Length: 391
Ligand SMILES: *Cc1c(COP(=O)(O)O)cnc(C)c1O
Image (tube, rainbow, N blue to C red; front, side, top):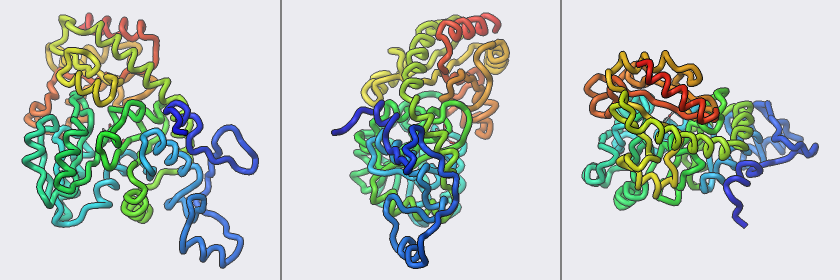
């Protein structure tokens, strides 16, 4: 019987040793001992799901994490990676070669943009960028030699959504695979595989750890593609997840649903409290009816997520005063954490872009990104209101 997501988050993929431990064991070992030379030979010829050779290829703790994530996402399989960027790089580079074409949404996390703009093109892959919300632009850009389309399902930091099912329809009509960076949507709300994504990529550094400890990432998809295309690339190029980080992520998954739902409920309250505030040019939250993609967020995720963007009147100076006046919310560039975090993208995460590129993406001088944590909602609202007063 298919179990619910919350049950899988707690129990999915668990493999117990002969000791019957309650909490998942950390197999902090890079290698494995064979009973005989013949057994070593046999294992190198063909390994089963519970047979391991070397931690870069696979490890029992990492395998538990991969299985739990796959169950949560509704994917057949997954390969855990050292970071979100190892996952994005692995998902794309493992399947592409010189002469291939990729279509990508323009609104991307800086390091994702680097892979598409600098790395892939260096190896002869042509990349076309489109406005992720413009289906006619996707249709015009995708052509027979297009091997992959790539986008963040909810963009950073402007929180615009891409219609996964619609873009997947266009991509599949030309035989291209759909690779979705799903960090802002979170695996709690994601139905990306069902909606047509072929590969779903997460930085598990964000909501999955959710407590600011470890880097991690994962590529999820069909067993054939993960084991046949992704695994050979990842295990030979060295981007595998460490067993210790996999253990931290497994413990993070147990509470992921509780945290993300609490963060979302608080985000809704904050959005209501801040909407129309005189110091704000705009309050951007996909869960608020005023958001241009509100209906799509409801259909695609059934929720508005844990992120809010605030565009302050008065540009950078106002944004900096706001950040510096906060007492509960901390200034950092992580997101999805139990602690509420603010970032000024223009001078940090997106400072590599030119002012024109930032303007094109809607990243104004006054834009502040807020990752909502699990603190008392009333304290967060009071902190945000007080800091706006100080502007
Ligand atoms: C953070 C992030 C990444 C990169 O993840 P790391 O774990 O930091 O390597 C990729 N995509 C998005 C949308 C992110 O937010």
